[in-house]
Length: 218
Ligand code: ADP
Image 1 (tube, rainbow, N blue to C red):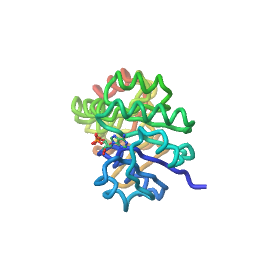
Image 2: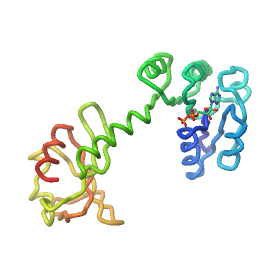
Image 3: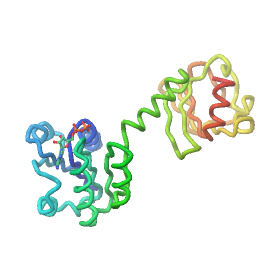
Image 4: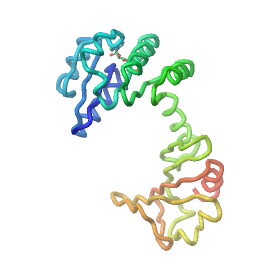
């Protein structure tokens, strides 16, 4: 059976999740208190309903506990976001993802049993900061406090050099996961594969090691 998703709150965040799920051909129930928002998403979501998610009976009558994953994307109204999350937990929803507005909000959401709390503005800010600090860091994904995956643009210092020659694993403890060259993506680079200026390489490693490598070679 197809997985079913529900998105509560159709602002920029919830709305873009709704669109992305729809583009993947998945079933989405879109919920918002605003009639205007619901009308906007009527053709994007499988079902779009005007409802206040803080009302327990409303959630029950929508059969919310039968959904595989519910995303709470209520924006500024922290109280509504917390109350909605609490009711989803009480009704036994399997996967609940909630957008937090700030650290206190995040703490409360974790405490009451949200399965995943996301902080899009903060996380995107961190990603952009890496990109601003070094023009060669195109993207950045934090794996833990210490480890990350980064996308780096190859410059002159690595041009026409093989992975063996660069010896990134031994010198910097970093692993090259993939090499992008225009539309081609090599997802299992071999030791004798040659890098060219302008290639995008995707590297996993400890932050300190990635920084050392980036300073020396990128
Ligand atoms: P964003 O930062 O993602 O753009 P917004 O604050 O613009 O967030 O959007 C949040 C959406 O959540 C709004 O469309 C609002 O109508 C909706 N919303 C707020 N409270 C509730 C609620 N109790 N039930 C359902 N939807 C809600």
